Length: 411
Image (cartoon, rainbow, N blue to C red; front, side, top):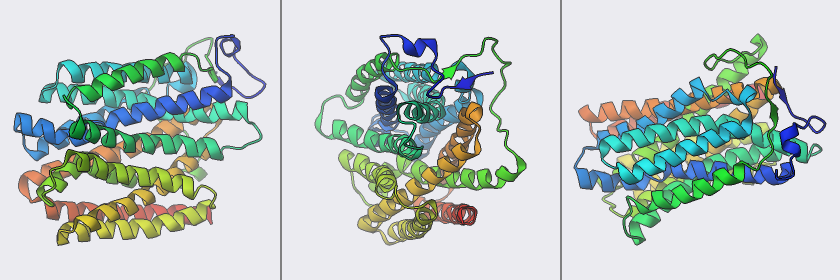
């Protein structure tokens, strides 16, 4: 049986003089988390360049993007929970090494097949990282500041998650707009950053004692008491709907800008997804001190305004309405997702925290992949605008149902 470390239970490895203190380790893991998530969205504004170079249709972009999401889902299902007994730091290192492999593939094999393989491996790395790093951050902070409570660790973990997703497209857009070799240079830079991150993470204390006898392997499952399943289901639907909005902007925003609004700027193709993800991260920081119930009420108001505005902006051909509505929707997703992760973490016993968090991320990334794949299939038959309107309507209904259910639970 594994034991999550507390202030009194420190593994021998964490006492080694070359290990960082838990407080410093917390920020190292946060920075590594941020770097990996940023790398995962670097290709967003570059898809148009690949498309122009290789001449493939828009639906192929959704396939390339979906390969990433499939990698995340498979990883969360198969290995995302293993940090509960294998160790948090070890799984974070595995994830970073997978991202390094993906960066190398982007450099040496960048036709459509290579893109699919690299995105798949990148997704596997993200799936190995998300739950492990989220749990690791909470445990490192609990040792360093036991009097503080879980609020700051929870905020940091969700902010670096969505903040990294925000920074990636902006960096990709800047490289495409102002620097040479935009299909190579961003990956070379991140290859170096990820290598540095791996070295730093190797110095972070472990927070899970490895079992003397390794438990039998099994894929992801969630063990919760019957009384907690309703709350978990509501959190899972909220995570699914929120990441569906993210999927729209990370896969199709550049195509919408070019096809619907005739905006060809690579910087704009990165700036629009950045604004959505940045709003998600910022809303979690700005409203962190609000009670959970107040955050959920605000999220529901913003999701109605944001998704309704997205449909209006696409139908009316207004770029300003599309962007502003995306920002509002992003802010709503940030609050909903933070609440969903908080609910999932609160339902889990310490020795099963990685398992339950992996499950909520698994559902979230199904939301990232499945709707976008369905949109890609629909685009083969129907035009872009009606497909997007139906998409935002369905996601809006799911967000409202999940938010209202979580609101009743918070009452």
